[in-house]
Image 1 (tube, rainbow, N blue to C red):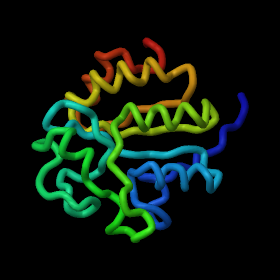
Image 2 (cartoon, one colour):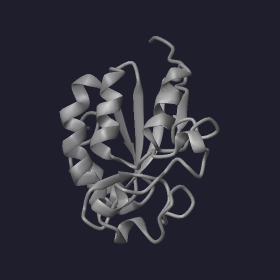
Image 3 (spheres, rainbow, N blue to C red):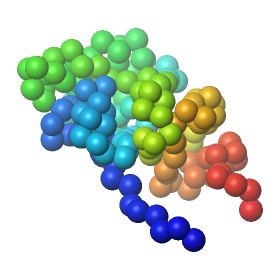
Length: 161
């Protein structure tokens, strides 16, 4: 059996060098030569899956309130970079589709570990992950029992036991 080595993942991108959970943050992590990225996924008020760690918008964007209560049309216009540094002004939140497309650009050698917050995230993510699977290494993590079971039931297991 071949020995495996640990993955080095940029948690939320490269959050000390670029705004977390943004295209710039993920691109920076991959440019540093990391094996991939780890991030969080949440459902917004209109049902899209948004790449963000926080329940609330205030810490990482110029928005206010809960991600789960805002439609994507509103979230798409928020600035997720200016609070980090002026040169990142205009960085936006990403949809899961955009994150997966970015992962696919870097191929199977680049890994994505996405933490699903809530079972409602899993069904949509499962469809997206299946589309991208041949072109990227994608894993889903969850801590809530209902979310783990939803992932299992959506067929996201590596192999049936």
